[in-house]
Image (cartoon, rainbow, N blue to C red; front, side):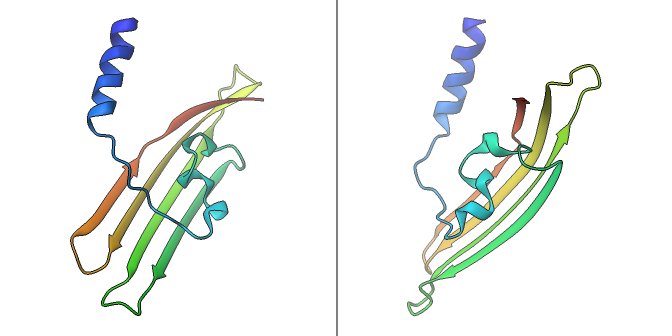
Length: 112
């Protein structure tokens, strides 16, 4: 089991980066900050966000993001549920080539 975690950690560490997407109303889509929030509040959720900032420059910052998630309840287990989701975001900063495209397929288990 230690080998699996070690290999998984090495694979994950290879593709880490520090630039994140800043959303003004982050509380509308808490999944953009915390992937463990998928499926916690409602049985099904979906949302889209758009942000355009500092357009007085040549080209400002433009951000699009979307998410969808669904709870999956197992009949045998009444105390918890699985949640699966999909999130994606596109961020372009100015007229340069500072662009990031981020996506994820979070799966979590919540215990009540």
